[in-house]
Image: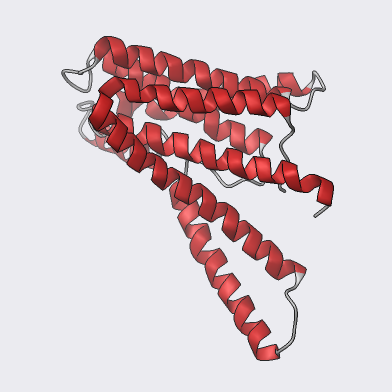
Length: 249
């Protein structure tokens, strides 16, 4: 790792921590306010969509449209990043993606403020809020893949948990092999495994902290809790314009 790259890598890691916190925070708020809807992770949406098909159209409206909305948000982010990359300004793709996520989170907050408390899961403002939340998280998921390559997903904790088990086991095996060999220093491969393990742990911890904070904040101040993720993304946007982030792959 080149010394001049270390600050940029540190900034990328801190950004991934903040983004995972936002995803967990928003997910817990929508789970509590929108009748069990998860907007940051789509595994639940696939299950709900399958159940909806089996029940012949009954159930949560957002379960039917959640997957295509998430996909469309990812596609829109891809188009935005490709367009911004053509402008040949390194910070522009990430900055514009963050601006889009902040705008969608603001719409999410506005729909909550107007419609909350929601009478049922298919109430018009509940659906609008869910659409904004799904879109914001779709943007974030695509943004991390496109502009922060090499960073663990800040949304999908199933994959991250699997990677945790794999990387932790490999790190333990590497440590055991060095111990048996006696005096053998850590190799570049071993160091890379530990580095990836630390990156995944950071994101998982951020997401978990976000779910806890979101639950407490929603219980305490209701809709106003959504100002926290908006402020976080806007802060990250300003930071991204001040200093470059690193690609980790």
